[in-house]
Length: 448
Image (cartoon, rainbow, N blue to C red):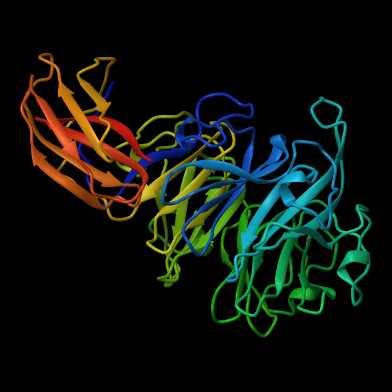
């Protein structure tokens, strides 16, 4: 059992999905017990379900918001791009990197063509963009498997596409992909592909001019806002293409160092920006693959750190995100409640920063292995026995929150006593917290 401090501010970090280790496992069970192998980008659909591009497992997986159950929705585990016209679960998906969704429930993914997958001698080749319809049918939207740049102005299915990472859609349904070969490309509703940024020469130039004339080091993740602006990560920079097609730098100095929190983002040092997301207040959030932190750029251009204490590790669940240990966060996503999701490829998990959690001031963190809190399910739906053993000290209240951080139960409790609890809540994963003086006891329960 882990005793953690009370949340010191209005957010806490917790593990949303993923167990220790890199392999494939856990489908049809709680996502917190599932195994990933290099979970790349993540996305949240209109229903709040989490989509994960599970790179080395060659699958797209979904975590149901209501139940917390994880399933595979695309990919049979084979490193091929095959199965067009059939069910996505029967298709081969070769090393998916990016994932996005539209308002109709369609899912879009970027897939590399890797030969020798699963060995140390694998070779990355060209990429594909594939679409999974709301009914689960998979088709190829773009790419021939060749990494040789070509095809602009014609059907995207005839285009050569280099290694890809991020993918997003605008409000009109146009698809944007970031190619590490220094370009941003667009697939319109007619299926025609064009380059909207990058002249194909790796570098950094072109600010305040046409994005198609600019040099881009390495386009990573991409997101769009409702005003027609597109943002993307470019190595040690965050850049923006406005609705008129003009490119700007909104963060970074190119120094590949970490600096500048509290000041203008354009004066800040960034190691290697990777995942990118926008919240509904216009803040730009990004991860840094070189430094274990998540940072935010405000609409006024000020940069700050919102998660990660700078130490490579895996610790801090139930506490302040700013004090947590993370490793290499690849993807960042935000849901409709402004909860933030981070895919940590080295820890093989998905962490959530809850936007609505609250608590008292923290004192110190104590980590121990004491089975003070025991939860037993009862035959009645949503009914549990909560047993606080005699070793529990100063227990006073039991609080249950859902995975959005919203409190659904708050009741007194006493050390050494048994408490019967009924949750009249929808199926899902819930966090049980027992307040014991200055400490917390945590456990998770699944209502089926």
